[in-house]
Image (cartoon, rainbow, N blue to C red; front, top):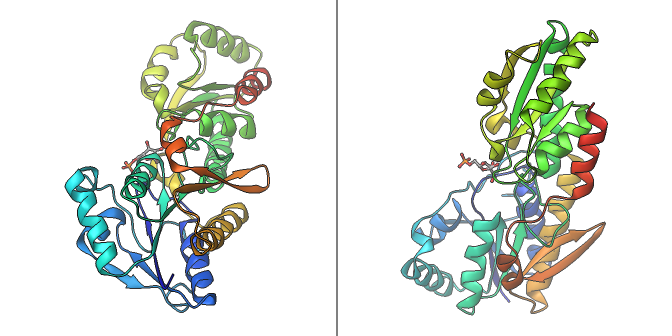
Length: 320
Ligand code: F6P
């Protein structure tokens, strides 16, 4: 192999730059050229790329987001788009491609794999909903962002006898909500995977208020509904005044944590080593502390990763 390529696709997350840097430097160490497509599959379709020299990837490790930029490409979803992508790769004499992203991006990686092109997928999504990996890239940083914000909110909540409903991201997954609820000592976590009893929550909030507790915290996953609707339906029964904070895209940015810098670096290095050794059509993953590979075919068939019951159980017990 003489020339490899990398791209970041779908929603960005912290740690993507660490993968790009590690992959480029591992390629260079093996006398292989690395190029980076801008804006994911959209850049691949336009043949828009830059050479990733060692210098080009210096100073990016500590930066959130992705300096290659990212996008969700509709054109790449079509058979014609995928054919164009393959043609571009072959014309540029690219021997293998690393795709960093969430479920949609890994589906894209699988599409190229089906066309016979050597590809390695790297799971990156704050939602942590990708199967066959304990952790996706960016999750740890997002969780740290969330707990920082929620700790701040708790300070102001307790100064005013207020209940806050904090809506966090996660698409259809309750991972961010349940994990951050445990880590911030929230009273309730509302997640799409578990049916929620609003009346019971109201009773418990009322009891808490009457005991003279100064605040209450509810973390709600965006996939479980709208925080404002929950606030409206509890405002007359909870005792506490209610307020809503939607954390939004704040969660996705910021300097990656040590965990995401290390995981990204490990993923980047390993992805290049796998391609150079002839492995293709797999997604890297993390199982406890060990890197794993799973066929992309299995990953895309795996659907959304199930929420760990232990998290739900803990959030329920420790809350009240
Ligand atoms: O998949 C990552 C994610 O941040 C989800 O948690 C969220 O629902 C979605 O992306 C937001 O997408 P966009 O950045 O396109 O608004």
